[in-house]
Length: 386
Image (tube, rainbow, N blue to C red):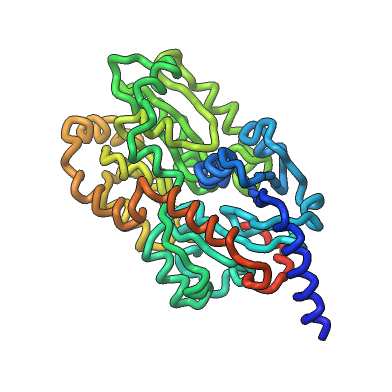
């Protein structure tokens, strides 16, 4: 009886909320990476006259520069507010939402780290989401077979973050100019993952300097967790200070930002260890080098299949002395692994270029649901991120 009363109250609440012409959407930006993943979607929603977009985060300071002056409410403040739709790109540490009609989750990576390719038993809370947007068929199949999501929830969307990159709408030349890089030198991007076992901790400065000494401009773009105040992610090292200390005018530039797409567009070659941006770079069909970090697979709980997949489309180096010659050789023969790069990219990213449109279609599908069509209202448990 009590549950029936709660459901009836919920239907009335959301019916009243729909009397107006504007739908209320709450976007949870836990980290800058989440902002980059959701950015194409919320940018499009903000341009619409029938949607009001509000932002939240468990740590506003972490995403302040990304959100600027956009309307913001704390996790505590959103608990009893009415929303028609909640969007996030990280199911951990979601806010309690007692008056939210629908929930939609987007994945924020494809690298298979932290057991995300083996989801059975992970405390992800997907049972509380009306839809889960998948980047590729393989990940969606794994989650369906593990009964983590249902066919009703699962939607194959692709990766909206990748659309601008593959469509060629980012001017890489302009990015290099803005960074003051030497136009006569090729540009390499160093973008390691976060972990105290990553290549950054193993040989970060030496990797950057080896590329510069081999005649490359070098752009350094770290994962936002490598800049976190939490020592679990950084080992207590201030990587912002360390990377700025090795900058060279016109040759080495350290950059920050939620979205790595502009600096990927600017680079002719990329060096990583194991990261989603490494897979994203393959969509440009440009040479990739993987710097082997021997403890990373264990520390980041990476699916061995994903390690093999990335390396099948890249050159692997195990020592800094190998890096400059390997990068030069790849730049001299950029088509050598082209076919494999395109194969891996098509496997990991569903129909790039159209993902934002498909994501917005899912949003509209949820906003059109009548009160009572959604999953029962249940609080999302706060869970520690892995």
